[in-house]
Length: 240
Image (cartoon, rainbow, N blue to C red; front, side, top):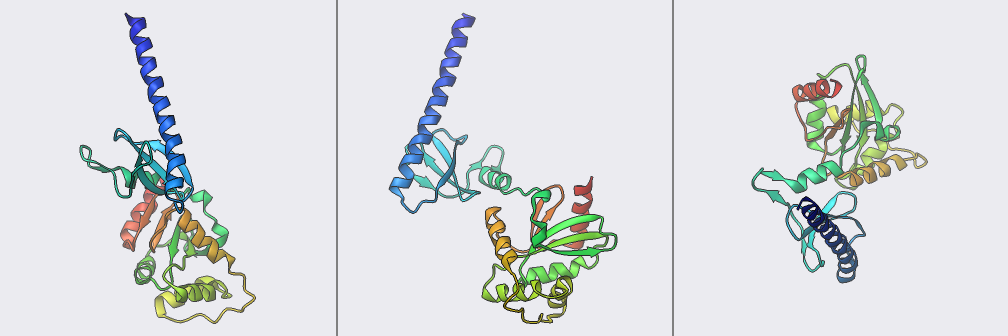
């Protein structure tokens, strides 16, 4: 009897694997043919919802579909029992950034005090929340801030980011603008600003959709202009 049950269980598991594989193959074949403009499919995985598959594109963009690719769902998948947003959790996992993988050469390095603690921040020079954040950050000492200029709010943001990046003292040019609205000098046309485009591409890849966005050394990502007290708490937590 035990052997029979084992064989039946194995057959059921094999059937599930075959079904999942067949479903993935159908989805990969049908969605692009039915929606030619659909982005290249990077991954297809089963969800806890029977018959529904997750389709991942563009790094961390999530859609849902049936096993034939007949329907496409865009939105959040909620587990009502645990009250968890499974889509948000999945995107956060896919968008996680290891601090040691950040392209620090494309950031402005600002050292305060002994600089022992580390923090990365993506900011747009025309972001009002960023200006408030910068004022609060004046009270946070003994930290090295890697500031990634992230011009996503329009053409003027790109211009200001270029002028700041090309300044002789990038950190001073940034703080002068953010704290006193002192515009940096116009950048020379020969200045290499490829780093700014790389920052934008990096942000898109890792789903950085707003400014400021903070990344701590433990990989924790925090969007928004959080107060200095919260920055201090998260710096302490990331160092422990």
